[in-house]
Length: 208
Image 1 (cartoon, rainbow, N blue to C red):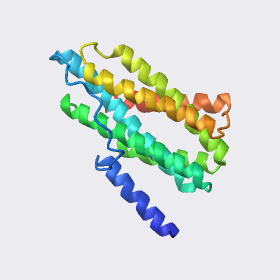
Image 2 (cartoon, rainbow, N blue to C red):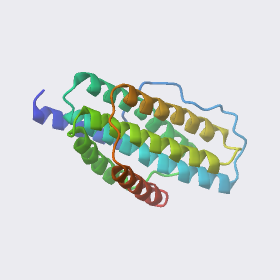
Image 3 (tube, one colour):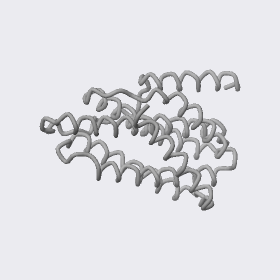
Image 4 (cartoon, rainbow, N blue to C red):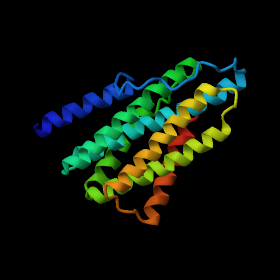
């Protein structure tokens, strides 16, 4: 595939991601359908949390696509694409739950996608070890983020809790898989910068 064709393909994937038309692995929607009626405050909180998570999944798609775009090792690339497909499941689930709660997605999602693709491509260009190290650290930070959301969401919202728990397990698996495939640990400074960027995204997406 020529470079031009690859670029066109990435634009197509970006548009499908941002319009919520990208397909994943077609796993079953992880809800119980046993949630009691939520109060307005409970719905508002869950909507805010799922809006943030949807923005995070948009960014995750772009990170994986950016890394895969520059990856030269086919095995690592296959790993990135597969992990990205599972992240697409998360994207679909977050959007569906957000719709069920009557919420709206962040208008900043296109910015998060473009910026994350560039960041993914940068780390991907540093070599497979660093690229996988970036995946591992990203997923570890996401696990901590999801655990905070699980602490905040109302215990009555069992559907949102079920989604978040499934996502947390997937993210943990992706971190472990990256480690098993030869990830290189990132510097403490890099990890801190990643945390600051993630905090900026989550804090703004919660309201905009």
